[in-house]
Image (cartoon, rainbow, N blue to C red; front, side):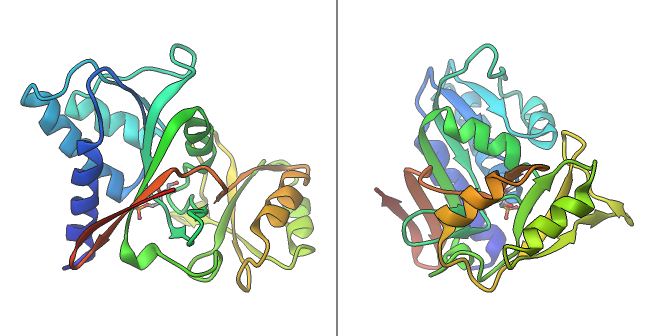
Length: 227
Ligand code: 5RP
């Protein structure tokens, strides 16, 4: 099965987990697009009603509006029932690297306000150790980003400013992202604390102890892993 079919599979399984009346966090990315489409089909058929979602990016907000999924904000709904989001790496403890799509800061805020956080991935995202498949995205303030980058370098990471269309990529908040390569991350909680302590670092893609289940798309069907 190709990766698009696997993403569609997990998007559909996750949409089945949603119940009428729930307040949802809506993640960002190509896998989430399939989740939103499956959610819309359930709404359209009348199988589901009364749901409302907080989007984690402008991209997801636009997709949800196009699909007619009702939206709200954390100002109106500060406690959510369920967030569904994709990931770039998932380790055996359900710790994650997220943010290749650039929405990590809002995604972490939304996931942290949710009673349940379901992660949907195709099996290529499953890793034994974080930091072995993709760089860690770190969101930094544009002011003084070069100095922030040097502090990250001192943690044995190799930060590279993310570009899009030959300009520094800017997040929905107007910040920069440093894609930071590590030679595998052996102590993710320690690295997260060190990054959190650097002035200029606004957020990073280590999502530790947040996911409550992971739905993995495999050639032999979806696997639902729960804590
Ligand atoms: C965006 C993210 C995405 O969830 C992550 O990059 C996975 O995206 P995709 O489903 O397109 O592979 O963290 O900030």
